Image (tube, rainbow, N blue to C red; front, top):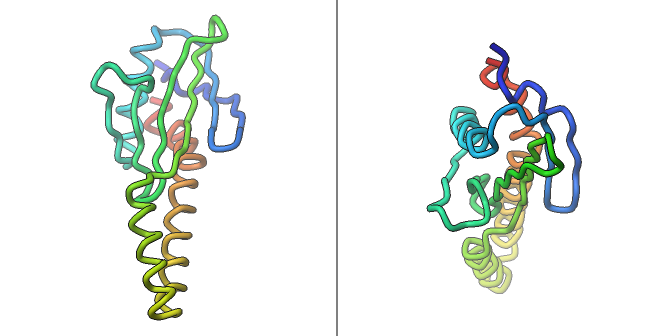
Length: 143
């Protein structure tokens, strides 16, 4: 039996978001639940919703970047998977404060904080783009 994720072929990019399309051969809630399990098996930290949120799951991609996983059954006959990235503002405020203090006290420490936080943001962007795409195309997803 072929996995429902074997056809996540159509992929579109927008600023801060990645969109995948697949034919709708199962109910959307079932696809969303299976998608969350697939992302967990691929090693991503996934937080399911409590029931009233507008998303199907939240991916904690890095300390500074998160992403909302949203599925919809539009256009008819297709399931759309949208990954909406966002900056996690509480850790970002801590990093900004540390950078501000370090820039006043020690410029080398400010450079280190800037490089580490930049690498963390790039890691989060990769995990929510090619990382999720790789999970959807993995051997696990193909069944």
